[in-house]
Image (tube, rainbow, N blue to C red; front, side, top):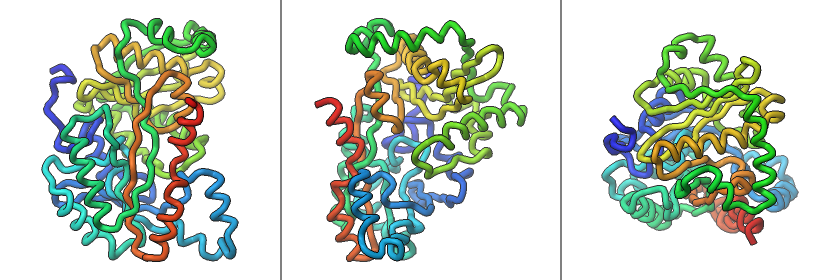
Length: 361
């Protein structure tokens, strides 16, 4: 069966296979607990620094407030999140009534946790159906009616596959960017390429799975933000899942694997989920740039509509030609004073949008 003809997932807002949600619930990230409501809405609990995605200047103002060392711990509470960390958007039940859903979420979780966050709600996403976007608008309205504070979320990068070749795609960029990217792509001649489906027989070997996970950890450890550390058990499960439509782009140099990119072909899109690199080789051979162009070429050759490139590193993705669609988080704060403080600083959580709009001005 062609991946674009697969049955619709049991959730709204879902860009990736529903199997990722199931594996997240079975193998949550390190130090997380996870579960799902009766209607299927996933949730998880973790300690969370509320200043993580705040603009640096605003974060400095808060941490400089009197006695922050004593009360700052209030901003790193055990928090309940509605959604997952393995889907681009919060998965919504296929049939739901927004006021009833939010009332149920509050009744189940707000008494036990000082902070309750419905994460990654799309804002008129061009990657979703009209039904999903309408459901998300209804969800936002219900959150507002129930005293949730709406905060700007992250920027999801994507490329519409409306070009006949990657050369045409590069031709749309500025001359300076074209020259720089083509220079970086010269390393392609030093690389060996392989495309491997998830569920391939090689992933029955624990040593092979461990090698992939170690490269993933390399990228995680050098990231600026550390929130959800996906476990080896989760990676074992998704690497061995033949039904998910996973495609792994493998990169080798002199016979050694120095990188991989795990993507999913789902609903007519190529969704980029996980990457692993060996350093310094991946940097020296410009693997990030090489993999970007290779992913675009794969999406083009397979007749896909979009390459969905994820949340991280928005500025470099913009440099590479991506467009962006934004999300919101709806935050319920049990303490009314802290809720008022959060409303006061809500505009300080727009770092992705502010950075991208400044660069494009």
